Image 1 (cartoon, helix red, strand yellow):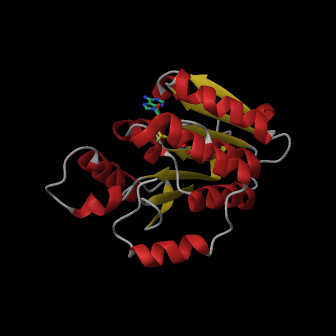
Image 2 (cartoon, protein in one colour):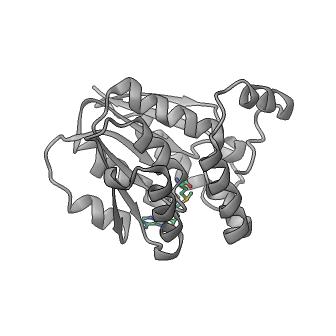
Length: 217
Ligand SMILES: C[S@@+](CC[C@H](N)C(=O)[O-])C[C@H]1O[C@@H](n2cnc3c(N)ncnc32)[C@H](O)[C@@H]1O
């Protein structure tokens, strides 16, 4: 959970401490993820993002959700908790190792019945899903170069009024630095693609590491 460097740290801390906190299960998952994955634990979403994901799923009344990038399960639990009892989440990831932690925590959280894990490249999993507009809510948080494909494959299956949340769209504030390398240029291209897409209404929130909300018109 690398902190965003485009928000004053004191203000970021203040905002997080005035947001409904995670419960013991999510805190335990964050602690175990840190022990098991070390530096890679920064991939986990921030606690305040988890609170927001649950709220967004509840507010949209979503019943069918898809996530690309599950890791050890934090965001999937937050999404599943927002779904009704008969709601379903398809969770996509390539890692058997990391998602084995997720599966344990889905059991502990009592949300296993709502989640179906699909192991394999996210693009292949999404392309194999039914072509109708059946997805109500989606969260994209996997390899950054894959975002345009994940976005398109989800958008064509998204119900009108459905919502996609996309993580890491400000790249720790490096998004406006023309000399930044790594995943920044790919994210800049993705952000341009979304901003120019007349099929949707979008808002890029300077929240956590940048979270873009995309509603299908
Ligand atoms: C940033 S982490 C996801 C964090 C997660 N949302 C959470 O709340 O803990 C990114 C995940 O994307 C997965 N990933 C990487 N490449 C992928 C691909 N091509 N298809 C699906 N998942 C992929 C990684 O295995 C990793 O678990």
